[in-house]
Image (cartoon, rainbow, N blue to C red; front, side, top):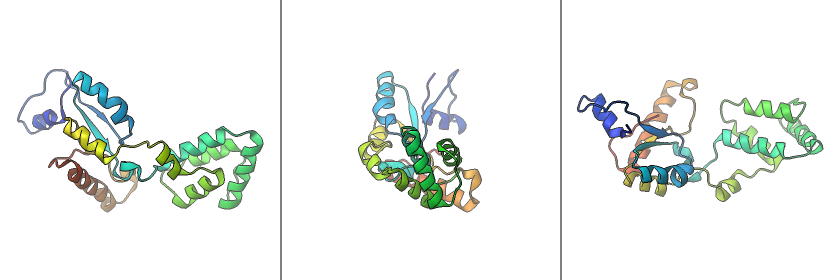
Length: 198
């Protein structure tokens, strides 16, 4: 039985019981597909849902570093061996690395746990990947207008942090900021007093 976030909140506050086999659907990150693909299906079937939005990505202001890495790997995979070797040599030279192949490049860049802005910018330049052009051409994330429309349609909008950083790897003060500030921003967008956090 699909239940809303409000029903879950009421249950935990002792105001109401949940029905048998209760389930609540949610989607993390705030990808554009939540609006274009998921939302129409949920509306058609009258299924409540919570969408947890990463604030730095809202309105396609920036491309998450893992999504940048995906573009880099895709670009490298599409090249012939000779071009791959040439670009790996350039990356080695620019960053003082000793990667031995395109496969080595892929292993290295996919191992990043945090955004290393200067390194990512250098790789993007060497590979000829323009992340701003990508964001403009294929906006992967939700917009503020879409979030507000979804909220007005009855969906719950929650926070998935400011930056999508792994909270276990950052200082407690930064963790608190990720949670509190992101919920404050969602509150400002939706006008809701209670904002769930994932």
